[in-house]
Length: 121
Image (tube, rainbow, N blue to C red; front, side, top):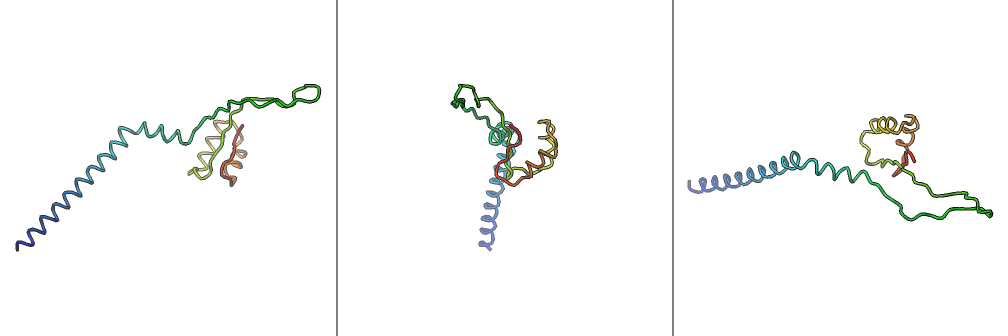
């Protein structure tokens, strides 16, 4: 008889510990989702968006008369990383709208099988 009571106490203690640990994990999850959501949203966006400045200017290409054939210029490039696209239709619609490009041209580049595809330069 005493052994059954002892086992019930052990089971109750293990169950109580499991409930407390679960409660702590759920509380932490709620804290992260509700109070720190903006911080983690910014960190996630920073992973997907980046701006790179190339500081060193390249030399100009000139002909024998000194006429400039090719020069430096600032460009902005938008690319897609295919393995990170979960909804291609939404990406195509958004890019064609925001970049004011033909949807067929954007679709061709988004659906092209490559690791990174430049959409617009």
